[in-house]
Image (cartoon, rainbow, N blue to C red; front, side, top):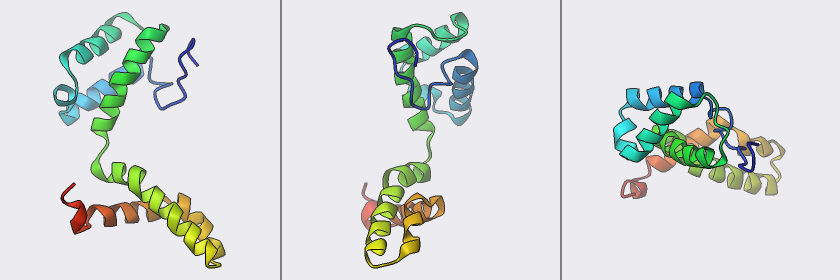
Amino acid sequence: MLGRVCLGNTFSGMLGRGGILRLKLKAIRSGIWFRALRSIDRALIDLTLRVVDKVNSDTLAKALISVLTILENALENRVSRAVREVGFQVARKMSLVAQGWGNVSAGSWATDLSFAKFLAIMHINNPMNFMN
């Protein structure tokens, strides 16, 4: 927790110079630095890197988290996004149905990354989803 800003998400350890710099370099290397961010957002990150070692301001932390979220989402590939958004949800539903039918071992399906990835890839490759 940083002041009144709750940093329970993935950025709690990234609000130092090292974390911000790593994310910036990753974004530049992948080519999304200029595509995903507006010039004001890039300037915020650049100025923060020049001036601050660790973010102590609540206002600056909120602004940086907003920009870093944009970068993280842009860096996430299609399969990872589908696993997060679709794969685990479908795996949980299938697990509950199978458990209802008496399959005791189906309880682990809901948290199985390989199964969720399989379901996500099946979702991506469904012809009805090509339109999305």
